Image (cartoon, helix red, strand yellow):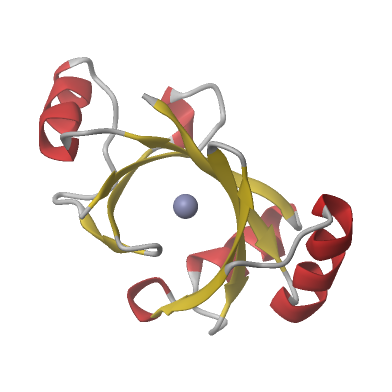
Length: 131
Ligand code: ZN
């Protein structure tokens, strides 16, 4: 298991992209809207892992609500797994709160599911599996 990406909630995706292009000294490699989550994402390749910038496309988006409550910043850490269904079953049996009944389509052509931050010392954890 490795960290696939770190998700960062941003108010203005375009301005955040130019900040991270300067910070990381490389271009954004992929932009993608995820309508089910009401977000637009932008990815930067950083070795084995990626940085995912997340901007809300609607005030009802979880990202808009997160920023209203906590401000911009680290939103989640995503671990890549080879069998997301088996991993969710294992985590449920360990008492973790899985926020999705079933894995759903996420950005970057992945199946994703989230584990509640209260179970992970305050960090929202995403599990993702390539399709
Ligand atoms: Zn993510």
